Length: 558
Image (cartoon, rainbow, N blue to C red; front, top):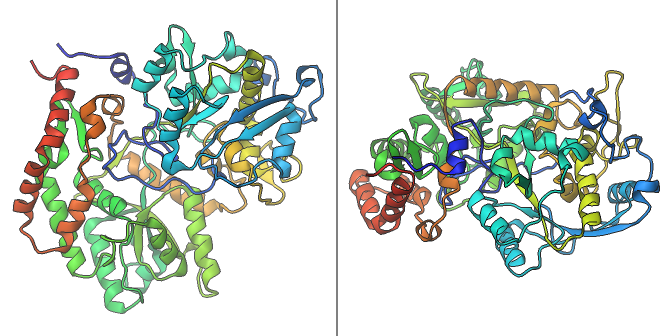
């Protein structure tokens, strides 16, 4: 009989998991050795803004002071101070002196102490804070998973949202509902975390799928006689290879790099071509497999193809040793790169196009295109991802008045006006509503505080599709939405919620660097099959115990 835990049963109802890895746009529940796309670099991305917030629609209390007046009414007569963390807050940065911080602080009569929280040690810090009784009042939990979540609740280390929160803070409730995780979050009728939604505020997406896409030079495609490349927002494996070969033969690039990116995303592109699951541990109908073994033939095909492309000079010769997508992005923007696999969000595409245009007077904005890479037979694979990224939890030591004021601030950021302010700046200063009720920018102002405060509400991904962000043009929106539509027609790999939320010592110590092994074999002359089989055996003591545990725990073994 299959053993089904609460979160496994809810998956059957379509519930998505909280992200286990950092990266705006959610994850697919992959393991720490698996590839992942880089998060969107700007908070300024998240449909129409014309709707009134649900607080106004249902007549509930407007704790966000919707008229935009400074605080000082009866609700906010007392100044409330609280500590908080957010994503990638850098030590030594002043987040509390600019006008955006002052606007929010005055609006809610709060004094916010924003702690440093660099992402490379954020999860370790969180665990130290929570186990040491030192959690800030509102703490971002970047690597949240439900096993730890339930354990912390059992230990009394998290404070639940107050009774009646759904009515008092309706936009927080709307955001949580949009993530699909409300049932998972609920323990004995109470909720102890607020996940930050990705889609559902301005753009609906069901299912939510990975934005990772191929970014390439459309003008070079025309120059080498492939003017229809990517016209339907898809590019097949053989078309991509032909394009790279012709670009190389024409001498259009001067830095020797063609398909160039970090190891993880390079491998990810070929995984999506050959239907290799984006998790080393994948749960199918008959149980879990370890993909290097369970999909051995596809892996060997992947490595063989990468080796052929590498030896032909179609892959960046340094990709195996330079594990940094930022170099590839810089090359694309300088105009020396034919293609790379990276973010397919409207904001990401606009940043590449904008940087490219600024690098030379000869560059045109739409020289850079975006597409979904598919197999030659038309087969397409892409991963579903969770509809949330990170979450905020609350210290059990935080008093009721302070928690309520924090939730007032968060509810505003989760509403339409606050989420627009998070991306554009101060209402009626940096942006305003147009005649149709849509947010439109007036000016672009840099506010250091906007980065940490923006993530008190929604992730910014779907705001980029409103047309309200000055740097994002309509063609960026149209192109990236068309790529999402192309992906949606293919095979979508479900979120691996059971693996993401499984916890054991075997999982904690599991560490097999599949991507580096693939890169090593792609650039050397070893016998691929023999080397791959040896790699499987060398790591058996690492993957086999965990694989057996997973299949036993979830009832796939007798």
